[in-house]
Amino acid sequence: MKVMIRQSAKGLSAYVAKKDLEEPIVSQERDSLWGGAVTLKNGWVLELPDMPAETRLPVTVVARRRGEDD
Image (tube, rainbow, N blue to C red):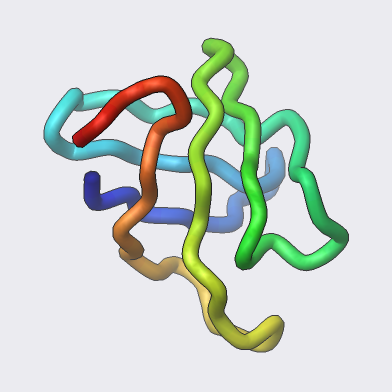
């Protein structure tokens, strides 16, 4: 699914347009945001693609939700 990751004054958030859902990112698997999983406030776990650490935000990426096949 396509997910927009952006930085705001409150921290990182993820927006999933297909679900009209925006949630704060509450934890991340790696120090770098990319190439690992992030957990959203609603409990979803998204696997993000490998990208350079200096990737500028906001950015739209194709992420996979753990536990789903879409």
